[in-house]
Length: 265
Image (cartoon, rainbow, N blue to C red; front, top):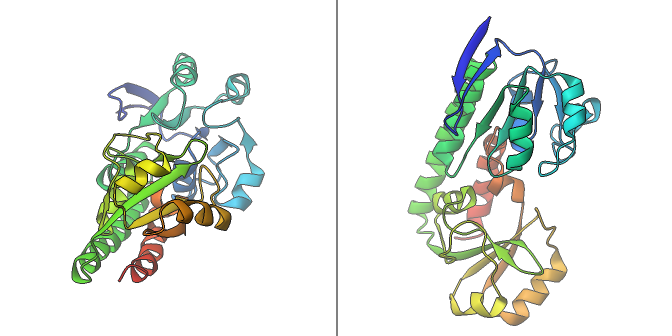
């Protein structure tokens, strides 16, 4: 049966419903699809789609999120490809969309993420499962917001994602929204992912600097480096997946942030 859907870029696609040969080219959305129970339907994923690891090992790798193996994807003959505007390269997606149905997400907030989970549930015939995940996420993050208010968490924060040059998550990003939910105000005013120097960060009077585990793998040695330049700030290593993965990982993120908030009391 043919069925039409509108993706988050406003593009209409028509697929054989329910899809039986799915390629996901975004790690967080790949994990979501597995958590929706699509073990048999997922035939391809990227080399970064590492969760769940046992499923990753069994599937064909179709390149990286920014550089897909187009010929391999064509050979696999998917009946649905699921991507994301920020994660994937526009030219790759346009080339694939000429031959296959490609559904794209475009996510900036927690509400966007939950909307995406619901829409992907509809797309792959897993609406009840998607609804249950959204129930857990909504309840958990509402509790986190309440806790942050009760504990008067109000921290000025910078969230670093890259080094040489340093880059931060700015406004109009999913990470920024997750910070707000947990009582933190982003001191970086630019949008998206601007480059920043430690000298600039110092002038922003941030109380807290979070060093992400991805895409750059910050470690203990980087704490020392940054602390020397900004001694007044508290510096913490954080799990980047919890702050930036917008699929079913958000269920696990709830417990992570309960523990994280305790460090901020």
